[in-house]
Length: 114
Length: 109
Image 1 (cartoon, each protein chain N blue to C red):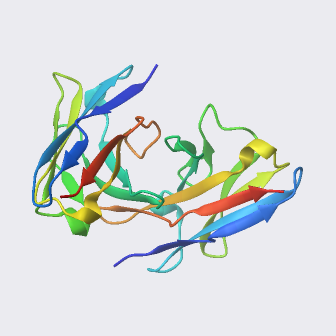
Image 2 (cartoon, rainbow over the protein chains, first blue to last red; image 1 turned 90 degrees about the vertical axis):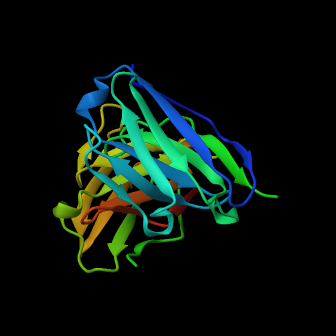
């Protein structure tokens, strides 16, 4: 059974940093692109970025370029999202998803507020 | 900035048929955009329904189908059930990035 479990969310002040993790199981992790998606409270889904199988290719939405970094550790079957210079508008539930989002985690809430 | 547009809301009667569409600000949507569709119910993570325009996942009910229609991606629900009431999102692939549509709130009434 494919499982994706996000962790690391919480309350952070504007300008601060946070690292999200996504633990994957039930499939061969290093065979898949992985994706981060976010959803602000009461809003729609927003594609944040993705990473290829060996981490050599990464793509981001414009508003997070230079602030967010996606990485992965295939030995640990884990995906990461390092977020810095956080803004109030980054407040959202962050989901990790496999590939073109066929499987999703349950999400972790990031709140950026003073 | 690329914008993907969906109908904000639609209403359908139980047993009826409804088509949701997904348009791109860059022009006609083709299979190259790998259109996919997702269902999200309140308090839940999204669930994938359709990928690569028309392919269903193993868990996707037969009443859901995907296609291209008039330059847009489309999701058709035939024989709508009360449990189909949800928010539906499309996702399109561009060069190096992907974009979700704004979502369609489907009401079954």
